Amino acid sequence: MSREIVKKLYLKSCFEELKILKPGNHSIYSKIIGMNLEKFRRAAKISSDILTDKNLSIGNAIFFSSRKCFIELGSNYNLGIVLLCAPIIKISIEGIKNLRSDLKKEVASIKNEDGDLIFKAIDYVKPGGIGKYKGKGNVSSYKKSLNFRKVMKIGSKWDRISRCYEENYSEILNFGLPYYRSIKLKKSEKVAAELLYLNYLSTDTDSHIQRKFGREKALSVMRKSQMIQKQINLKKNYKRILLKLDKYLKVYHYNPGTCADLTVTTLLIDKIIDIFRCPV
Image (cartoon, rainbow, N blue to C red; front, side, top):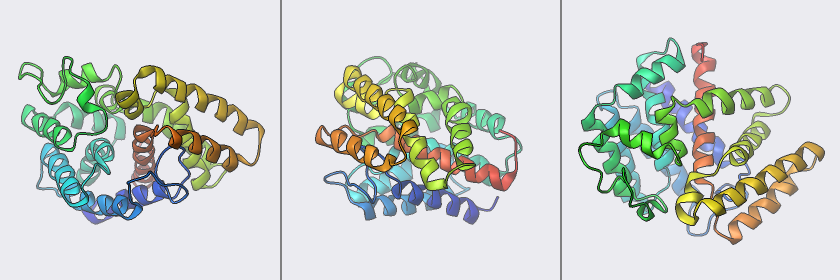
């Protein structure tokens, strides 16, 4: 697939995610105080140019795009999206035969030098709550004996992005993507994306909330989301219910940023497999 096509699909996925109602997260419906919608769009454009550069290794692509976004925008607008989408973009440009197996090979082939650059990107941007973790495998002071794969394995116990690298995006490919595609058969893509986000919020603790506020608060948000999901199954006016959840989460500054990252990534994969017509 050409670089320009992949870039368009990535940008479309990022822009679509900003147009859906995502309780606790930034959108055209409800912003996060201190964050700017146009900066989210700008972050997508900056990263699209670098992530689709065929001359860059995956580590360089992640580091340079993350650093440039942070320098220009002054805050973390898309590190999670960059981390999750970089391998998908890379295999798409190279040509996909089977998305699952190609993705597994790509992640498994990440060299120590590229792993170091990925950790450098995370340490540079410092996503919310990352500094609170000082245990084994923290990206600021991991030892050389802990390579990229080992750190991802350690992090996968509580971090859903690390888990995607460790478990070959199983959360998305086995659950998120089939759920989204099944809803699309009955509802619009916008509705399907909103329910997809809520589904991610309901099935596991959000890594961003857990890093900043601890596991108990993250579990509380997950359980509340599960209750909301059951209500939506019974009522047609689900927007009102989502807005109520959004208000609650924003009062306490609980931003499910990782669920938003997973949503963008799912939208991207969905578009890619529609073009490639490849098995997942």
